[in-house]
Amino acid sequence: MQYFKNRKTIFDEFFEHRDMLIVQYMNGDITKKEFLDMNYSFIQKMRVKPFQRIDSYSKGIYNYQYYNMMAKYHKMMAQEIKNKGKHPNYYRKYIEDTNYYYNEKDKTSFRLLRLIEFKNVEAYFIKIESINLKNKLYEIVLKDYEYSVLHSKSLWLLNVLKKEGVFVNKTKKSVIDYYVNERY
Image 1 (cartoon, rainbow, N blue to C red):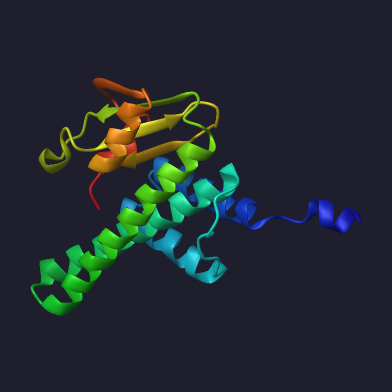
Image 2 (image 1 turned 90 degrees about the vertical axis):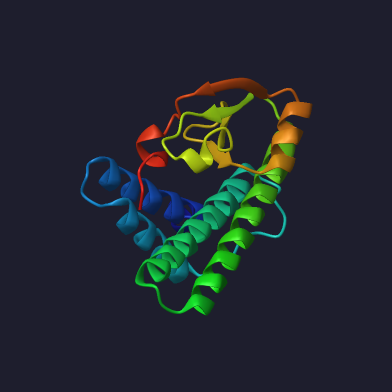
């Protein structure tokens, strides 16, 4: 019986690995690109797909991180292809995949917020260096959960946040400014 108590869950493994990468990134040991590459490789190795039902915080945040990482990875790959000026079909496919994963991430954010009934949540636009994301990218902080920060630029999700009364019409510095304002 003791064996099962000490056994790590997939959530433990995933978040411990992710936390380790975050520390390496914050210490300057790895770049944002390396962070994304290593996260992508780890998820591929784990072979754990997103959960169909989000009936716990852990499942919701796992799905969010999964889709977010997949979107960023595909966006990075699309940019690399675009920079080389080759393979426009691959570029289009990566962009389609990027949009798909970001959409799934936004749906997951909504499902997670609904699960916690929008309680102790604050959302606001963030100060961002990217001109394209200014007044578009917003942050959603789940105050009851440590290190729980979601991001989106979805208009439909923004409208939901406003309707639920959790969106503050201000622009603030992101709680993870060191990450959101670095290019990859």
